[in-house]
Amino acid sequence: MATKIIKRKELGFWDRTYLPAVGLGLWITSRHFFRNMAVHALHLFGFAKNLRGAETYQYPEEQRPLSKRTRTRHRLTKREDGSPRCVACMMCETVCPARCINIVAKENPDPNIEKMPASFDLDLGMCVYCGYCVEVCPEDAIRMDTRILDIAAYSREGMKLDMQKLLNP
Ligand code: SF4
Ligand code: SF4
Image (cartoon, rainbow, N blue to C red; front, top):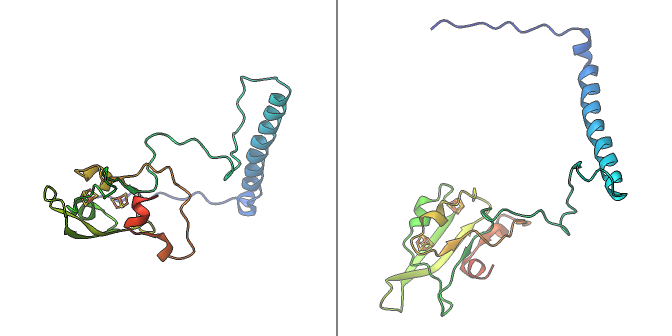
């Protein structure tokens, strides 16, 4: 296959000084800043309501509204008696592309259910929030609907959730 050689345009004097690029960047930023300031000032006095200024949320006091389908921190759902719905089928652990779920199964005291998790650990520091674990679960036992997004910890250990934390988000 023939190789197409593309010759790069030589940089001119002004390109090498970067001044036009810096000037352009400053102009774009200033244009947005002054436009938004003017629009919000007009809104304060009841004018130009049809013009939309950039919205800034005063996080964390004010939080951006989340879409219903946003995937947030995981939780394990419970049965009516408070036990986990999870039947330790290992489907979520198997499908997880980040390998961040670790389940140890034990026998369920209820004769109608074969197994339940003895431990269920999920490492949020490795999770990529793909939602596969939720989709694959045959029991609707794991969900990502806690609306908790501000997940942070001082250590990697702090990012790990055990079964108690997952059952009581
Ligand atoms: S959301 Fe994806 S990466 Fe995170 S635990 Fe579930 S399957 Fe694994
Ligand atoms: S897929 Fe559902 S039932 Fe199976 S181990 Fe995971 S959470 Fe439990």
